[in-house]
Length: 141
Image 1 (cartoon, rainbow, N blue to C red):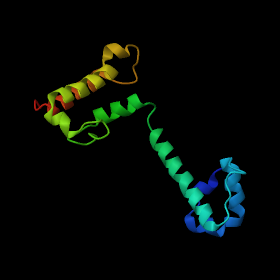
Image 2: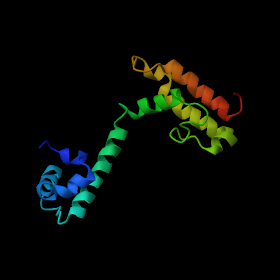
Image 3: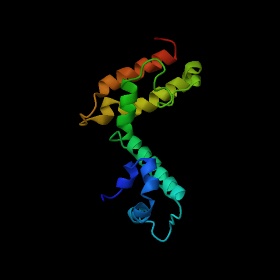
Image 4: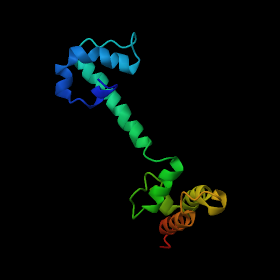
């Protein structure tokens, strides 16, 4: 079997293949001597835990960098979509200073003059969108 294949096996099959999988799971995880899988339920718990870790890692590794993630969120921002991910809270709509701090934080990250030679993003477009989001926050949009 391929390493970590047990991560994709349906729950019902895990219990049916308990005897053949328990040692494989322990060996694949590198936890021999630390992990003891004594029951089918224990096997299921271990597999579910590793599936959660794998899902979390794949979510985090979707973007090349945090900067690319923020660029995507800014460029695709509409209404209140992605506000939470961008750190925009109700206070940004009420307090112009908080809105300005948010704007400055992202301008420092995406200003074209700070990213000379990097053609991976259209920094002018990102800056326009940052200004548009800021204007909406302060009631100018």
